[in-house]
Image (cartoon, rainbow, N blue to C red; front, side, top):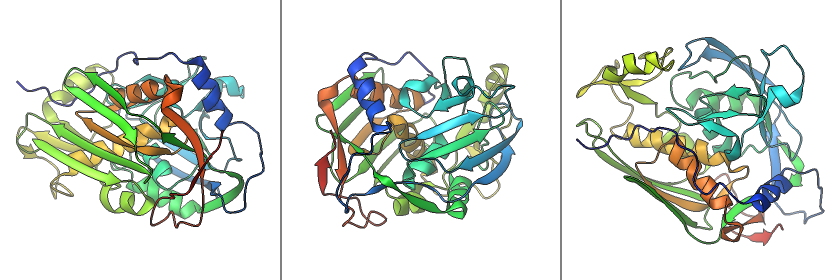
Length: 346
């Protein structure tokens, strides 16, 4: 029996590198070093905006509010259902070292035990639209799943609009390959100055899915066109097991592609024949967004899931010589292409 690409969470490999943590924090510091007028600037949204939806795993109604944030804030999740205003309890930075579980979804948490789950589809949309700073308020332990893709979040962010801030955007430029292997899963993050490129393959013991491959350089346009509408998926035979673990309580044919053997149960079938690898690529965009800044590099991976994606980031940041911060010149139209003129930001 061939291993399916279901993902289970394990402790991240190569979790050392205290100096790297300080280097990451520097990107979110309040330092306002003067830079040239042509450098790309950080962004946030123009106005607050709200949506309501069901959580995929807990099945509860969730209210999500997106709010503008100052430069160098990064992406921060805030639990508004807690009986406290202590930000050490309510707030969780959307960062790779905040991930506390990656079983079936990506969950972040803080030292106080506060957590937010299923953040990957929203993070993918935020990252793909090049939004650097955002406060995300949520009144439950989980982001709403909507239709199981990033489409609703893209629409929400479009409605909110974008605002440019004064501080320069920093990119994480991969300098040397980082390779990782975990059983049948393997992946490499290697240099690529053309932006974030993802080359992903999956292999399921199911004739509807089988082997699928996708290679895509991520930009706002390519994400909207190729990935945003691809939905999460699962197998009917696994539903009872997942629900016994407290998962998939909100899963329906309205928010996930469901397979019963070789049959797709959803009315209308798939949105594309390779929707499965497209969604896995969407997940990878969201998981890699937890680097804390946009990545300039190519992620080539096979059978990767949330836990493996997170392990790759830990491996990258455990080796300070494998990456650097750079700023990019805005003379290149980044809405159509990726900036190529770079200056070290260290």
